[in-house]
Image (cartoon, rainbow, N blue to C red; front, side):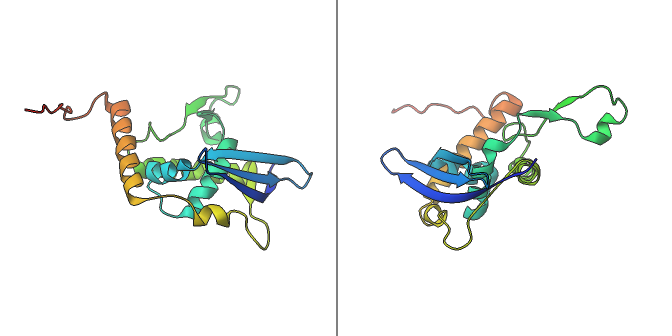
Length: 171
């Protein structure tokens, strides 16, 4: 069952470096999504994204995504209909590349929006514009975060870096 929410407010906690997005369902149910401001820059670095609208959409829908394992595709279950198989999904750190991770994450978010939860801006003035204007993504921040993500992914996939990092001495 698809639940549709409409964004009703955005609040900024500059002291703690947080965004709070409030959204409401037609039933009147209200939800608050609180996330660090740096999350937008992290998602840009992790998945090689540069469109703030897409990054924000991903961040708003991620909490509604299923766990890391999900049922296998129905075509795989046709051979054994009585047994549900769990297959690990491709994640940021199991993907072999940023492109593969980006593709898998986009598919996951598309599934969330099609089958579980869709969070949309209201008609007229969009409270998310405040985040769009003040997203905080910088070239230096992206570069540093991409390096951390790539290094961590490599270590997770292959066990160590291809060339050891040597400490330099002050000789």
